[in-house]
Length: 88
Image (cartoon, rainbow, N blue to C red; front, side):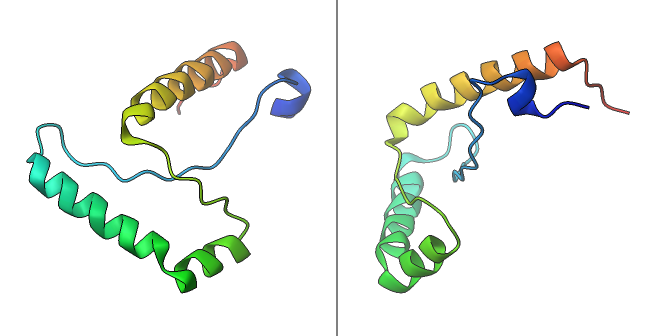
């Protein structure tokens, strides 16, 4: 079986992490969670540990996240469809 890179040479797969809340969450709660995460991610010990694990700690603007997700879903849906992969 060929690798993704052999079949789709221009494909870039990245591991990313996002924090999500249910639709309709109270905006004040969302702001509180976002502020807490921003504070934690600014801690030198947290940043150092994650950087040592090879992570690039580039924050994504919340407004850009929806577009990023849409692009990721379209990219991987095309790859899965083309591959013929199916769930058992």
